[in-house]
Amino acid sequence: MNNVFCQLLVNAVIAGSIYALIALGFTVIYRTVKFFHFAHGVVYTAGAYFAYTLIISLHLNFALSFFLSMVLAAILGIAIDRFVYYPLRQQNASNLIFLLASFGVFIFLQNLIQLIYGAQILTIRTGPIKEGHHFLGAVITDVQILILAASIILMIFLWLFIQKTKLGKAMRAVADDPVAANVVGINPERMIRTSFAIGSALAGAAGILISFETNIEPTMGFSALLKGIIAAIIGGIGSIPGAVLGGFFLGLAENLGIWKISAGWKDCIAFAILIIFLFIRPWGFLGTKTEKETI
Amino acid sequence: MEYLLHILLIAGIYVILTLSLNLIVGYTGLPALGHAAFSCIGAYTSSLLALNMGLSPWIGLLTGACVAALSGIIIGYPAVRLKGDYLALATFGLGVIVYSIAKNWVSLTRGPMGLPGIPGFSIFGFQLSEIWSYLLLVLFFVIVTVFVIKRTVNSPFGRILRSIREDEVASEALGKDTTKHKLLVFIIGAFFAGIAGSLYAHYITFIDPSSFTVMESIIILLMVIFGGMGSISGSIVGAVILVVFPELLRFLGMPSSIAAPMRQMIYGLLLVVLMLKRPQGIMGAYRFK
Image (cartoon, rainbow over all chains, first blue to last red; front, side, top):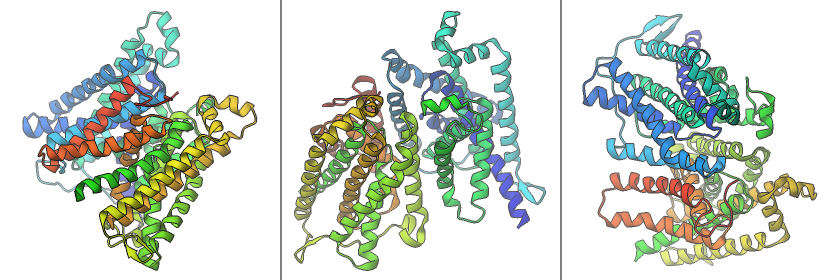
């Protein structure tokens, strides 16, 4: 009983760190463009398949493949922005048009992946399955420790980047007020490209990490995307610490929620939380109340 | 010939779905992304009544539509209080919840195993076993839907809907209860989606949750946008083209492992191109603001 609780807690933290990474990427992009980039989920899937191709087909080592897959995911993100969102920005399209276009990109790329790799599940794990470490009555595997460590390192890097570097400061300026940023000589288009690169690399990283832990399939991005968006909203849309908090909160709520009921209800729990938040506290944990007017 | 009639019949069911969603999306300007949830509720209610209680599909169809309309209140109530992207996200979420319930409430819906052996319709004791007779039944409901939606949008009620779409604050300032109207639109849309779901279930005789995914909702929305936002003839054209056109892939001799993702890719690409080039659709009068 107690062991079950500890195990669920460990699972919650691992799931939470993946959700937090996706939510962070989503938030970084949302802050500069202010629309829901649904194709973020397919970048996550693409990250996993890039890693699969590099490790299994090209026999590269793990660390190099990890890095290259993140770069490829960033390039994919920039390409989506360049070929779909940039022309829409030129037409001053509304948020909903961006949202639907991003859905189109999502459907297109997900099925492209399915066309190339097939609908079946693939696995990256090559060696034998090792028994995990026992920790307070719960079992935690090496891969899970890697996931947790890598996501925390990425979160710290992102925080330092946004807070300490000049580029990060310029990104914050565009997020706050694109017109004023333009006046002081920051190119908003360049900042949008940067945010797509960083956000997509984070989504790619989440996809790569999950591919070390479980099997991958073309449809994996959908559920992950929804969790990332829900985490970003309940944390406070546009808030970077909020995305991390929301990710871990969602991981906990989902995994402790299925303590007594079947695991199939996870998605249901996640969306029930979203609906409750949208109804009662739409600006999330750390968002500002002024956001309420836009909702 | 049988195959051609089958495609037409499926197109007819999609016409009902597209028209009912157009009322919500195209005429009232509410970006609802969970329309398949309503047809799911209609299909399951009608099938379960027929299978467990032996009721006639006619009673099932009506009850299914009413239960779907009721769920329109439950789903619409929180949703219509939100704006734009958030409304889209909330309806999307409610769509996932309904799908998830259909999949996980195994004791009632048999979950992913689905419900087999759903009885078909009969009229005055004659079983509608021939496909053309079933096609006539669907056609009858298409005509009813077109008639009701047309009357709705051309009435004073419909004018209020369009005023909400064009400028919600202005119509509120004129004393119109916009929340009530938006909720009513959800109820009407859900009612017809419930009918479509029930027609589908009794025709195919088997349903499982995979027919009512959120992707399905997006495809219905794509039909609305493609045909034209706020256009009845547009919805009919949009649904028929998007059901019939991918079937042509079959004649190119592609195996289904290629044809299925190819079909989805076309839908995705079409959505992107429409958003880039013509967001109001072929015959549309409105684009998302």
